[in-house]
Image (cartoon, rainbow, N blue to C red):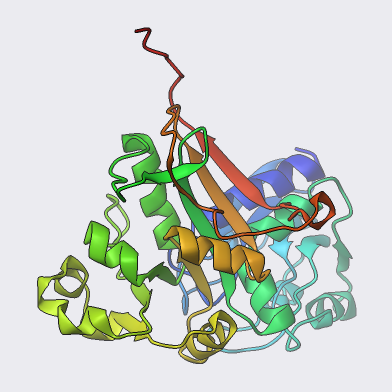
Amino acid sequence: MNLDQAMRLAMKEALKGAPFVSPNPRVGCVILGSKGELLSTGYHKKFGEAHAEVEALKSLTFDQLKGAHVIVTLEPCAHEGKTPSCAQALARLPIKKVTFGLVDPNPLVAGQGAQILRAAGIEAEEYQGDLKVGLEETCEEFLWNQRYQKVFVALKVAQSLDGKIALANGESKWITGHESRQKVHELRAQYDAILVGKNTILIDNPSLNIRQPGIQKENKVVILDRSGEILKIKDQLKIFQVHKPENVIVSSCPDLETVLKEIYHLGIRSILVEGGGQIYSSFISQGLVQRLHLFTAPIILGQGIGWTDKINLPHIKNKIQVDFTDSYVTGTLSVTKR
């Protein structure tokens, strides 16, 4: 197995921990033997539990590790927190080399993990191959948090081919199909909280919880409601029936940047914005979005509500460039002749 193949496998392993590792990064590890053969894999499963390197080492003996090559998506941690230092653990083993995908921006690590390994006579190098963008995406929320001390913001938009999220009367169930809705539940589990506007709650009366077999997780919900109208009718709303009171946050603050600062201080490190149109437009126009999950159904709704209707650009040069988008298209388009 070559280095690129091993790093790609490590990235795949890392994603398995997506629902449960926050505020830690998603990390995967692959260990190759002295002849390049695959010995084991591991990933960080849950915050507070063993890191990826330790998971990968569990099944291996001291002799198997002689001359081994450890490939990990993020620099081994140098500090001890809820778990021991991975760099220190690796430094005590007879491995030959460690290749890490990215330098950890956490100031408690930031190159110190590599220094520990080199001091122990182990080769330690940052990966320089073609998978750099993928490595960044693997733990993008963590990287954003560490570099900027801000909440990572992702938008989930379910739209028609003509960019509508609802009919003119507000009806929106269901634009996309079953597979897309299942994917949305996976996405909800990946982020710390869901954020919606008041109208999404009043019109759709959603639960906004995670309904995915195999993922047992309670998520948080942030509702933007300047008037406090939601709290007056909370007994009528599903969201207050399916979530614990402490997991529903209603904010009356009119400024999105202030809202993001407030929820960051509450320990929320990433959010998935799920509507509605005005909320989408506001986040985008203010440059607050790091990831767009775009679900496009093979339908045309015509006159209706678009998710960018409130964005007004004076010139084409002012266009908003989107670099980080996950696009999902389900089904095929069929036109009924009349």
